[in-house]
Amino acid sequence: GENVEQHPSTLSVQEGDSAVIKCTYSDSASNYFPWYKQELGKGPQLIIDIRSNVGEKKDQRIAVTLNKTAKHFSLHITETQPEDSAVYFCAASDRRRRALTFGSGTRLQVQP
Amino acid sequence: DSGVTQTPKHLITATGQRVTLRCSPRSGDLSVYWYQQSLDQGLQFLIQYYNGEERAKGNILERFSAQQFPDLHSELNLSSLELGDSALYFCASSGGVGEITGELFFGEGSRLTVL
Image (cartoon, rainbow over all chains, first blue to last red; front, side):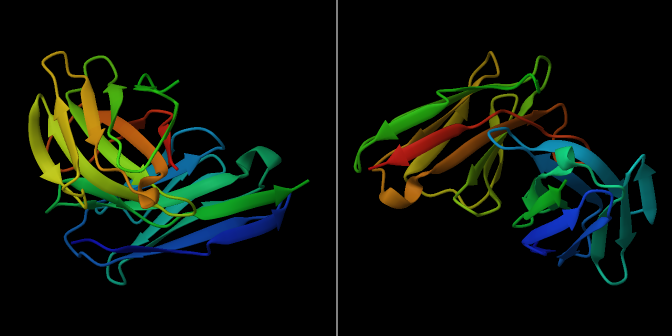
């Protein structure tokens, strides 16, 4: 089945700086790559996603890039704010198991 | 608010016991997914139901079972509980079936503590 690896596990940045989280996946047939944000005491919430026919997608301060050849995708957050502090999960669709396979998460802390 | 409701929010029980976690999906969503999140771990897929039928199975233990009822709510049953079963259990719903190409809406989770 699909295996998704995520780095780093923790990331601390100063307010206003950029943050980058990277993920790799194993199943070349995966075609959908969402990113979820989990705030303390809450369930994960979708913040952006990308499909395999697109190399980059941007939504305000958030962008995701996908390199299908290398089987990796990244989340970029620019001009970080304290409210960006949360745990971020990447995921890939697993066609065989019909479920999302999640990475292990990145705890992002934005220092004011 | 995702529209997915999970109960109970917290549950404390003893080893060897059995518990049932309940999930009501968003209105209109036919697919329900169960995920387990252990301390400092990612989300591990357990099982998916679509319109009452099991559609996909992940790393779900034999001591665990689930079902989806005609009104589309789902229950996750955990039996012969062990200390290692302590975790956050999330339910998510979506409108689709089969391959996932859209958003999953997660509930706030049920925190299970086994003592």
